Length: 62
Image (cartoon, rainbow, N blue to C red; front, top):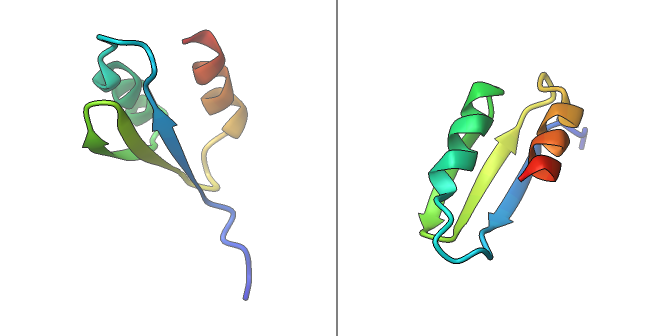
């Protein structure tokens, strides 16, 4: 089996009242698809073509 180079990250929103769609839109701008599971939890796919440091920087700023 060969590693695809893609990653799936799971994101839990801990701050009450924070709109997860803000993060999902920023991920979309980086070409990362995401799927919301409920109001405080979603998953995002980071393909091997996306610079992971940009995604990491996004989460560090939030």
